[in-house]
Length: 330
Image (cartoon, rainbow, N blue to C red; front, side):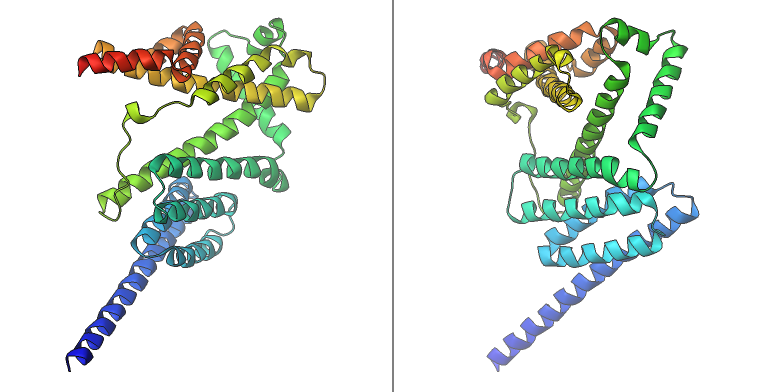
């Protein structure tokens, strides 16, 4: 009798868990479906919100149950998005990217990857998605890259005219082809946009998992975000390519050198910003990060100082300096 009772209780709990899982999945699908309908009624005002919610929903559901359940939910989200979204362009592009990001992130959560690795996975997925969308899907849907870059050029000219600045003349005088520079800026902005979306998805997912007590992935202290010494040297070498890119006649190699150089500079800027923030907190006991960003906009020459600080911080000397000051404070 006791064994029979245990079997009955186990069977009952199993049915309850299955019912709970199905109910939660149906509820998530219903909420997303309702939001898509509202989005259509309001002429797609909430599309970006919905595409950001989808990977988070998948991540939370997979963390509560299993990765297989997350795949089933993903299939349901794809179906209702394509049906209720009326094949709107943003749904065709970003919903699959969001779903894939959610599944990859969920796999990392199940494998107990650290938060930095999860964030890098989300960034990589969204960067690839943005590149495919910009250079493959958009042209196929009637939005050629040349037209989008021309619109970007007109926008820059209008913004420059408001402050009395002719960007084209400035860069031409510096020996830089303004049209080629716009292509480079367009490509880099696409990459940065994907990276920002990946970071946002990661931050929201980590917060929601902890807020609903599903899984605590811990917190990352800014001091623990140690730079990579080899990467710092590599970025400094790649940044130097910008001085030889102008002598390259092959357009593909020229664009490649410029893009790689600028991305390397962005990495060093990031390291430099980390140093400024930590220097303010450890040495000055002040949060000067935001103030320094404003100064960099007013005095662009500070960006060069930030790049050099980033290299020295990543290479070791400035990191060691902060380490010594930190030990003294402790």
